[in-house]
Length: 85
Image (cartoon, rainbow, N blue to C red):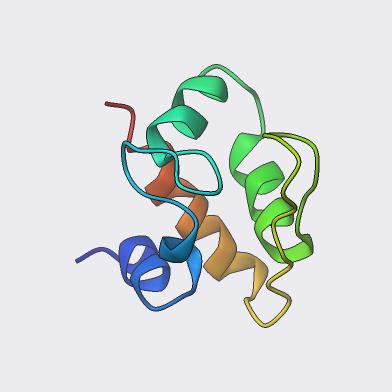
């Protein structure tokens, strides 16, 4: 298992997200499709993972994860972006 996948599996991410189905937040594949051609997206998503987010995907806010380092969050973002289909 890659480090990004391990970090996701060891976090609370799977209580709101899954690979292909929207639960509370968007599916990984939705995120990957939305940001497929965006420049600097790994750092942008890593910042969002660490700081939290609201309004980008609906009414429910994503809580912040400040205990993750920027490097860990970037690994998680790379894993999420690889889930295109």
